[in-house]
Length: 292
Ligand SMILES: C[S@@+](CC[C@H](N)C(=O)[O-])C[C@H]1O[C@@H](n2cnc3c(N)ncnc32)[C@H](O)[C@@H]1O
Image (tube, rainbow, N blue to C red; front, side, top):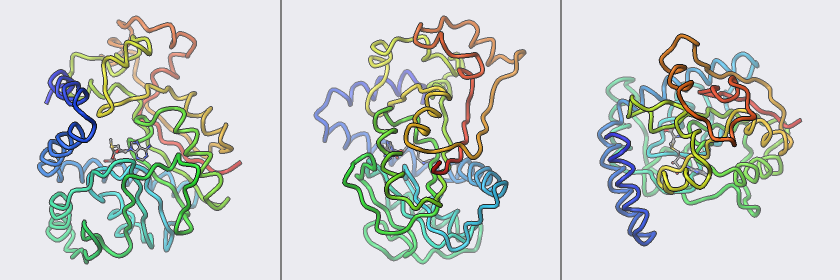
């Protein structure tokens, strides 16, 4: 689905009463996700392997550890990877929404049986999750009163932070600084590019940097919210919450690439003029944090 159609659907849903808008949004997403489970497993697998490399470089072993996933998405793809292929003892997964879908999870279980000969012993609750995976939907970790039910060794997020407003990002990390043990690590995989460019090849991956805050607000909705934060903004938030950067890597684009040419054709909004080109271009950010 191209971004214009998607955007039109999201804008139409946005004017409906909240519960009705979200209800239709969920049905639509469930339908789309059920039909793209295998693709999602493949792309998550790439991220998972990248994450393991980053952790290995710091001699971080996940055997018998507990992982907190921030932003569960539509199925426990990442929790299954960590518990089956990194020896993690358990994964607790938090989401501000409740996107999990039993049929998508059935497809994930079938994939494990067919491709890895692993029978998922799925028993628990509404989504029949394995015992070592706990889902906490409709939970905002920015909430000051939040308490964890277990000791967490690693926080992991994939393609989530760019969808969280700045104020909440700071609150979430301040909350982590309070509720996690000092030894815990946090690994975030962030996609700071304009997501509309994934489905519309005519758009630059930096297109949204031409808009003022007010203009951008009109372009997106609560269903496709993107904070447009750039690399230094994230670093400042993490540092303000008391974290130090253990490792950092990100993509940039070659000067002779089409991606760079499209970026150069943009007239950046003045809000972005103070950033260096490298800071603006930084994509696929992987950052590992620890309390300073
Ligand atoms: C783009 S999806 C990514 C899902 C999954 N991590 C993946 O890689 O497929 C972003 C997810 O983050 C969740 N999310 C957004 N804001 C959040 C917040 N403040 N706290 C927890 N989850 C949040 C959304 O509900 C959604 O499930």
